[in-house]
Length: 315
Length: 315
Image: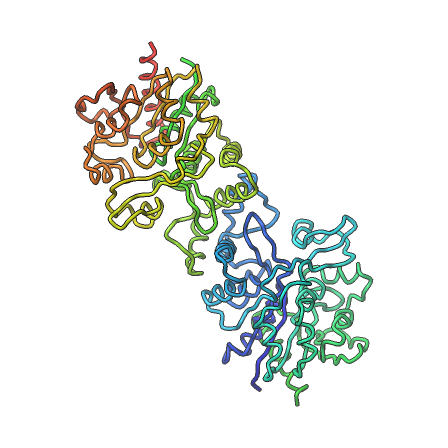
């Protein structure tokens, strides 16, 4: 089966499946476009930090830390130690090698390059064949409503370790942000084989992408099958605050609970093979697969299972 | 002998004597003000880098690399390696720990702090008692006229490794730069014990400081003895391009050659004890001392010798 594949993804879990897809499609690297959430991008110590773009890049380049789930493998922390000694802000961890990406990105952005151009440059330098695209070159910033008021995403996510209860999300700037043109064009391709929503947090990884003008409509209008992969297994998030957020918003902490967020958008939802069959969700076909990605092989197998499921929809 | 001591200095050699003075005056840390050249400050990768301020801070904090003569001891280079892998500019070496100073300084400057305030903060964090003052909070940028035209200082000094022949120097911005107020006030103190021009490059370390409005006049008007220490021993610069510059400008590569730059400004010039007595220079008394600072003890001994010589002028 040939044709173009578009993946939508956020951080670590999404990056793993994006990596799996890049391996599954390695024979034709340019048959994969990965649209990445930039809602948790932020400015820190004067640096432009794009955590989800970095997670995807590091996963695809084989540079991701396999244990921590964020940052780079074999990272060192001398910068952070020295920064702490200087009384600098140390709530956000910046590894010595990771910092090179932030400094180079910030510098190129300050020189007038777009986030798309900077990302393309970094991906080329890291030998990544797939097209990694920010959802928008315009700033969109996820904010979280908590009992303490609205918090910036990284303030909630890293500094506060997701402890405050979430009530609502907003994607500041999304009303005026333009979808990244190549991302939109990829979703509108006639030869589209599948659109894959990776196992990322629905609220703060996927929905910021869907909120960018034109993206949700392009997915709905696409003739290609649209599949999402569960970030919830056995009623728990594999990583991150998805389960906590579902609970706090009064939703079911289950694959079906996530699938319901995508009604009207997806054709199929991939649940973990260890989970019982979910209660039905309107217009959503459930597919079962091994969704836990503990190894690089797991990523490839899941990607192949997702593509196989997509191809059956076309048939 | 009590009273305030002011040191003028640039990079490595100057920083060593500044350190010696801070040790000699350790009982009263606030009796020492160190006015530091900022003419070789520059912007690199979006960071505000102040090489001479850093050399002084690292020397005084005991953090300086004892072998390389610049940067921090026990430094690691993972950031640079990663930056090179990304195709980033790698002609200026940024160590992982050193980078913390550049990021913290850049961030604080971007928030509106002055270079003086940032320097004071960094010195406090590093446990430095002496007052380390930039010559000005306004940007002054040393440029070097070569057969290829005017080069920015770091372009000449680091990227081109001082290879082009120098014809002339300019300190861009110095016409409008205001002297750092505490630096000027220190030079005007009634209880001034000595003004010490450290063994720094006369052209690109000391003369930028002297070129800042008010500084040369304050030194000339001071009743305190003014002493300079030679950066040339046995017709060679201990470090850096001072000897090469003297030659290229048609001047004598000798202690006297440097002393002549300071005629009308200094009372005494400290030459190395291994050098023969220099030819006379008008109004300059030559003093002989061990000026090569190979160890921390050497720094302290030289500082004591300089202060002793200063005190004889008062007596």
